[in-house]
Length: 435
Image (cartoon, rainbow, N blue to C red; front, side):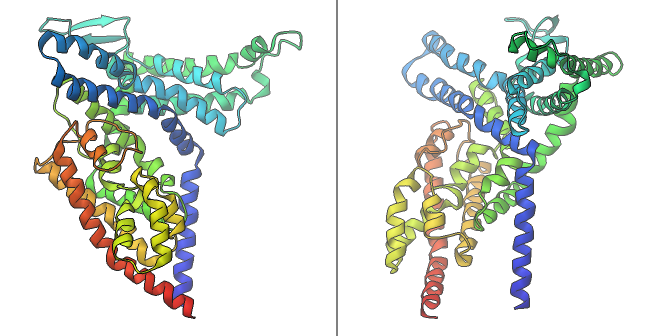
């Protein structure tokens, strides 16, 4: 009884901490913002796929270069402005989560603040030139694209938080009276907060440029983005955070509480950099990306539960389990597995929690090893998460059929790994019914 009470207190305490992390307003705003801009990155993945996989099959030479302008334009409007897009969207989401009445104004301030901290002069390589030249009056895709994405997150959050707090101070509001149109009145209400926020960041950017010969984008990238990304996207750190998220799902708390907050931003940066490198014909830098996780660690949804469904349909003698599996298999093909998680159930089913957490780890380790050994390409296309297994592996790796073989191998191992725990779960259920 003591051990059981200790275990229950541990689960309760761990659950409460996880919920607090997931509900932290800045992290929640970040998660909401990424969900809002995700269609852009999926479109970027489709553009990269068409440009570098399908067009080369049909076109050659100058004709290929001409049609690839299509994909290049899509990349410019999606990946190459990722940092510029994320800043105002984060400002908007933070304002909504704080119940602030002017989310659009907050987004405008966040966007302006990001531009303010951009470098004034840049070095660029002219077309057909061998030497870079110094230019001014331009924004670089390097700063507003995937490289500057984390800067967009930080500046967007800081500027929005400052603006919202200052806008609630009555003493600095300029009230023009009731006879003024609401749009004009609202603008003057936030005039001083807007001036203070943008001017403060401009002062900071000036000091960095004049005194230290650098800019905020470079500092955020080198001091915050890269160290955080290296920890969260290292193999041990990635597997630990991901497994904790899946464990929480086994106790009824959606895995997005942890994974969507701690992993998605850095994994998505890796994905976008891979897509940009693949689109440019450069070396693809990263193995661990958001699409790598989804493709090889979420076959049939979180916990790779399609393996459990197949194991149940082939080997189970439990009528109820087989019926649930039949109902869940079609959603599972499209990686929607809430029916099996809550209907089988997996939630609070201790025997099934073990393969639910460990099966994705095994699959991801297999895929990681296959990539390291050069047995399949790295993931370079952000495919929609509802794309069925095998198809998503082929598309995510830029049309590499070997990724499909890796998925099949992982699937077979997953079925075999789920099988004994499924049998144990059924025995536990039978004993519980007989008590």
